[in-house]
Length: 257
Image (cartoon, rainbow, N blue to C red; front, top):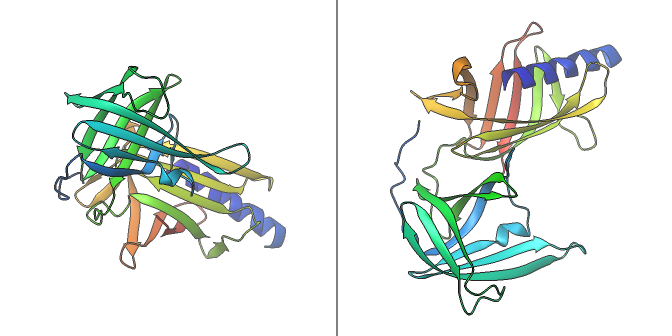
């Protein structure tokens, strides 16, 4: 993370100046039965969050049946709803699913399996799509998740500073960023000018841990680096800082999800 932020924001500073100058279970447990909505997901290369249509997608789980109610944008940009119903059993952290007789999506009798785990009241599904790993982190309807680590969620960048210079995120300008974080990892989406002034998009995914109240980048276990996070305003604001030859580089973010 340091390398991406350092290079992007130092490039920003040079371009602008040249042109104008802990893991725990404190959340307790909850049952599988109920309605579960997608919070964030991993699509094989990056963490993301559902749009206003797909965020309605949910799994309704009873003692013996599971209903997957999906919402997705069609070719006309309308929110389309489809359903699949399953009879299921569980064993060794696996949902064993059989398409039920009354499934609107058809395919009666078809079988599949999905690995799952419960962690801090989150239901986490692990499976593959087109050979790639997929992780869905689901939150149960009407359950309070305030116990989760404050870093988990979606953060929008508001500004950055390099030494004494301040750069504000503005619509239509080439400076923007977002962080999407789960308990498994996070993805930094960063748009900033390179040294020639060309706008570049950087998308980088990391693994992180929290130990002794400090956050660390452990994407490369041999190069564990501290992430200097500072939370404020009831954990709705976040800043990240790293030193550079041009002064301290700090990005500022606001939690939106």
